[in-house]
Length: 70
Image 1 (tube, rainbow, N blue to C red):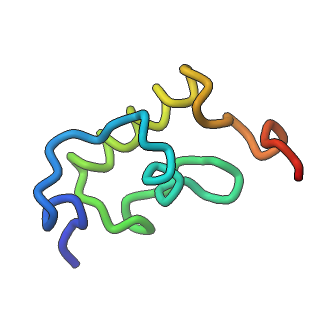
Image 2 (cartoon, rainbow, N blue to C red):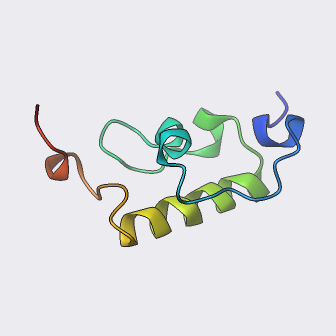
């Protein structure tokens, strides 16, 4: 199965696009494995670094308990 990012020729994963990054984290907000997401190693590292940076910049929560309950 080819990588989604390779098919769309994505060279940079932006940490500010949290709606896209949420596709690559689990319900517990852990970064999902490349086997589950279907990404190649290069793009899996980019996504993991973008998620970590988004967490640091407070754009994404670290854990499920930090989300706002509606």
